[in-house]
Structure formats: structure tokens, C-alpha cells
Amino acid sequence: MHRRLLQGLATAAAAFAIAAAPASAEAQCSAGFTLTSYAGGSSCFRITSGSTSWSIANAEATSLGGWLAAIGSAAENAAARSFMDGLIGGSQFHIGFTDAASEGAFVWSNGQAVTYTNWNLGEPNDVNNEDVTEMLSTGAWNDIQDSPNTIRYGLIETAAVSTVPEPATVGLLGAGLAVLGVAARRRRRAVA
Ligand SMILES: [Ca+2]
Ligand SMILES: [Ca+2]
Ligand SMILES: [Ca+2]
Image 1 (cartoon, rainbow, N blue to C red):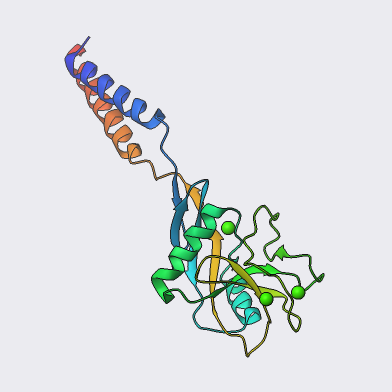
Image 2: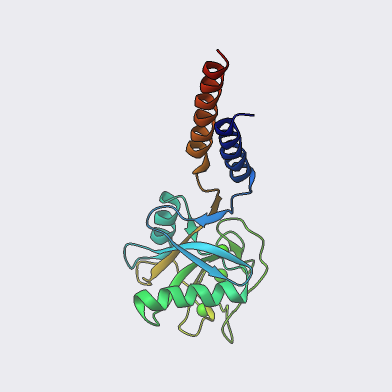
């Protein structure tokens, strides 16, 4: 067989092999969010634009396609606290835990199941109707009022999406087929 044809076949075969190899998935966040990984998962985090009541922070989270942080584990709790430490020091901040719908029955505003809580000693105590939650400097939680007099930054969360990188192999595959075509034409000419 013609040597160039063999070379072309080899190139095409290599391109097919690369294209067939599984591309590794990469976790990514929407613009403005920071990918934050921790044992057992990852989240996309960003801080609210200002220090506000819980409801206003919650509305901003929703408008951005997210929610006030829903904390599913001790590892996520520590990651959330650490993320906010880098932005507001040890200040407390809003998370998405609320019992506004049913007193005493706290739920995550994004609807996820409650798998972990980290209430501070004596909390939640519902003093003067506290129905939303802040995270303290220690990482422990406290129920607070949803009020213009109780303003905090909020931690907004979205899920990290897993994306497969664009295959860089399509061009290579094309190049391999082009070489094959040239080789085939030369082979026909040599025969003629
Ligand atoms: Ca979460
Ligand atoms: Ca309450
Ligand atoms: Ca409280």
C-alpha cells in the first residue's frame, strides 16, 4: 500500500482514538460566582450586593438564579464560613434557613432536604418572632428577625454545573481525513 496512504490512515486513526477518549468533566459556575469545593461536593458562592434584611437578600439570590446558601454538611458549613470570612471577616451573614411558613419547622428556601443543622447553644429561640437564620463568626447558626433593623450580607448559592470541555480533536480528525484524501488522489494518479 502507498506509504502516504498509510501515514494518512495512521493520522486518522490517532485522531479517532483521541476523539473517543472520555473527556474529563469540569465543574463551573455562572459569571460572578466562585466555585467552592469541599469534602462531598462543591457550590457556587457569591455575596449579596449589600447588607439588607433577609427577604431582600433572598430576593437578590432568586433574581440571580440562586438561593440563600443551603448548608447540607459540616464541610459545606465550614466552606461557606471561610468564603465569607474572606469578604466580610467574621461578620454574620444570612443563610437560607427559615421557619416563616411553620413556626419551629425550619426548611431550606431552595427546597432541599434538611440533612444538617448547626444551631448555636440555645438557638433557635424565636425571640420576638425570629423566622430566618444567620451564620455567626463561629459557623454556628442563630435565628433572627426578617426585618429592616436586622441587616446582614447574604451568601448566595447556585449549583456547580458539570461541563465537558469542547473537543479539540474535531480539527485534528479533519486534518487526518484530508491527508487520507490527498494520499488517495496521489494513489489514483500513480495507478493512472
Ligand atoms: Ca448548598
Ligand atoms: Ca421562628
Ligand atoms: Ca435567635
